[in-house]
Image (cartoon, rainbow, N blue to C red; front, side, top):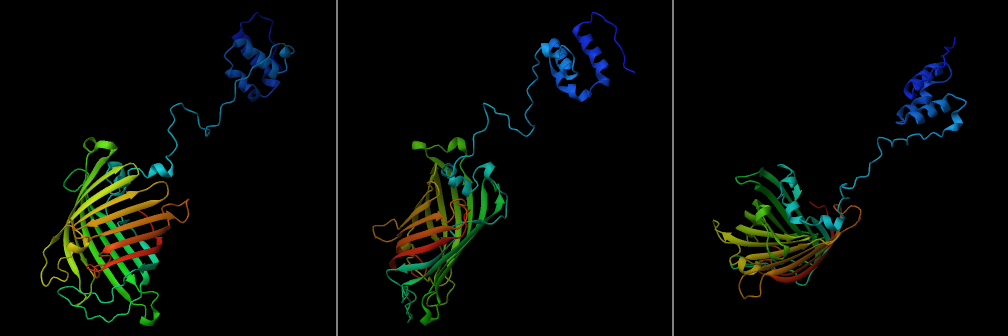
Length: 363
């Protein structure tokens, strides 16, 4: 039985409640859900009239509240975070990210990362192949017939072995680099490995605090490195070559350009010196500049003996991704070298060379 209301002069709220009670038998209450959110009583009553087919429903227009956006829809904010920086901008602070100088860049210990470039150059040609390597303590006895075109490849890795070592933010790294020259195209001589250098290192990296690193011209002094290393070609006499060294490195950067100045000091070693006056040929100081405009990475390295001898060397490395959508993957690699010491065996042999190939992976 349908309840019947007596005619009363009801206020808008009471009339609304009474109409809702009267309508329970006429329609589904869920159809009136939008009406409950109307703040104006007259609009709310007209909404109920329309839902429950009241005769005066058409007299008053009803304005329903706008539907709320889905919960997953992003709400525009005036101060929303900007989009990620483009690839060219991400090259900024390359030195800082490479050596984990800032607290936000720290990745913990014993994670393998690259050190020097890792590359394979199937085509590496020199202007003067060294068929008779010699030193003052080891005269040449070689009768090799090497070809000037060969393959060159390098594997170089590092891992942090102590984070926050002794000083705040300072890290101790261990590194290993292996560089080989392979007579890949010399089948008559059975394609031998002409020379391989092995170089383990310990590197102590001290970051310069941000409040102290500012230099003129927008440059920032980002780090100081102290290191020790050993380099050897692993061969027996008369082609044995090895030396120990201590090094000090300063690193500065400005956006996508980073510069490192390194000074090497040869330390004493026991036994016969396989390569006396080594640093008078390959150099005692090294200045290296890396530039990362967009997807390219170019590094120019000059080694100097700090004497007017015309010795030392200059090397240019350039790479570009094979797939521009994956700049950290495989990259085309080009290398030019001119001077002394491209290999430890050739420390006193001058040559110009060029290599073409790919770099394997980035840091």
